[in-house]
Structure formats: C-alpha cells, structure tokens
Amino acid sequence: MKGSLIILSFFATGLLLGISRLFPASWIAFDFSFYVLAALMFTVGFSIGHQPDTIKQFSKIHSRVLFLPLTTILGTWLGVMVISFFSKHSTAEYLAIGSGLGYYSLSSILITEYKGAELGTIALLANIFREIITLVLAPLMARYFGKLAPIAAGGATTMDTTFPIIIKTSGKEFSIVSVYHGFVTDFSVPFFVTLWCSLK
Image 1 (tube, rainbow, N blue to C red):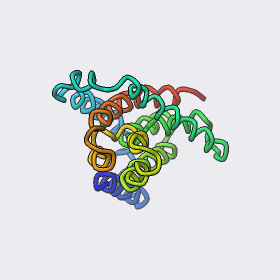
Image 2 (image 1 turned 60 degrees about the horizontal axis):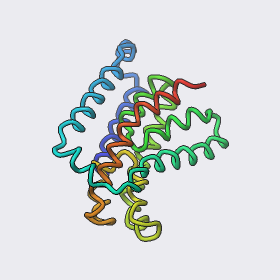
Image 3 (image 1 turned 120 degrees about the horizontal axis):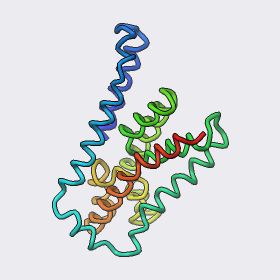
C-alpha cells in the first residue's frame, strides 16, 4: 500500500507542476514515457528470469488452479464491459484499462502512449485502487468468498505487493499459487493492453 501511495504522490506532483507551468513545454515534447516503458519492460523480464527455482515451483501447482489467471482476466473483462455501458469511453478502451490487472505503472504508460493522458490517468487510478482494495479487503474476501478470492482480486500484484497479505489471509500453502497467478497475469498485461488499445 505504501508503494501505491508513493506512486500516487508522484502523479499528483507532476499534475501540480504541469498546471503551474513551471517547466517549458519543450520538456513534454521529448518522449520520456517511451524510455520509461522500455526500462519497465526490462525490469519485468529481469525479475521473472532472476527468480530461483521458478519452473520447479510452478510444477507443484494443482492442475485446476492453472486456470485461475484466465478466470481473473475474464472476470475483470466482464466487469469493465458492464461499466463501459455507463461511460463515454468505448468498451475496448475500458478493456484496455481492466487488462492492467493492477499493474498501474506499465498499463498507464502504454494506454497514455496509445490513447492519451486522460485514459492513461484513469488506468493509473483504477489499477492503483485495485491494489489498495486487495490490501485492505483481503481478509474479508478470504472469509466470505474463499482462499483464492484475494489472489484473483490482486491480479498482477500477487507475486509482489499483495503477496504478504495473501499469505497472511489465505495461508502459506497458497504462496506458490499466488506467485504463479502473478507471473501469468503480469506477463499478459502488455499484450492485452496493447491489443485492446489497437482497437477502435
């Protein structure tokens, strides 16, 4: 949760500096976001490849749980499709936002590149809120909806920021499931966000 608040504070600072016009407009013309995106993609690949015994851990997962990331993605898409009926934005744009799956840093940059700052800001806030809601409500989710509920709610964050709360509420036996779920959903974000952004 602390990390989300730090990211949000950087966003708020940038917004205030933009409104105040303290820096020249030529700074915006330089494509910072592309280089930030490239750095993010590098760190994602590095973190996945650097984890010890990744393949060995994944081989221990029960076959029924293998479909959990898919149900998380499809459930998220179903939810945003319903919301899209009450908004000025297209269904594809909302599917792009939902496909961030809590990975606000990467998804918001991608959506800003394809669709502009307004939708990128919505993606940033929506995916930050997803992470915060998981952190705050994980105990209730596990109690009333089952041990897998916090993992599905956490989306791509279940192998990093929401991992500790998931282990605390669902149990240590779900640690491998949480890492697997986070790995798959994390890997899907750039592909699905780009796919939906490319549609009208």
